[in-house]
Each structure stands twice: as structure tokens, then as C-alpha cells.
Image (spheres, rainbow, N blue to C red):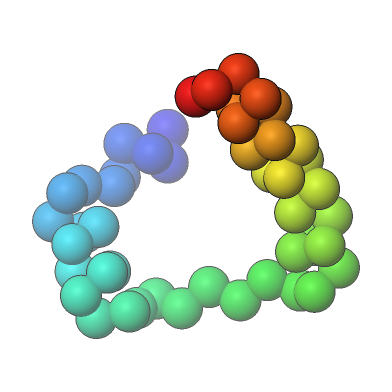
Length: 48
């Protein structure tokens, strides 16, 4: 339901004004990086 609140205009303004700023704790970044890197490696190995 929350994704419906996003619009192209809101996305544009967010990118233009760099607001709101989202901060993520370092331990979350470290944990999230692992599956993202695996997905990118898998995509590369498949030539995607």
C-alpha cells in the first residue's frame, strides 16, 4: 500500500532536492550488501 503513495513527481523532487535523506546503520548496510552482490554476480554470470 505504501508504494501507491509514490509518484513520478515525488521521485523527481526527491532526486532534485536530495531530500528526504535516508540514513542506514552500518550493520544493516553490511548485511544488505551481501545478497545484493550475490544477485549482481549471478546476473553477470548469466550475461544479463
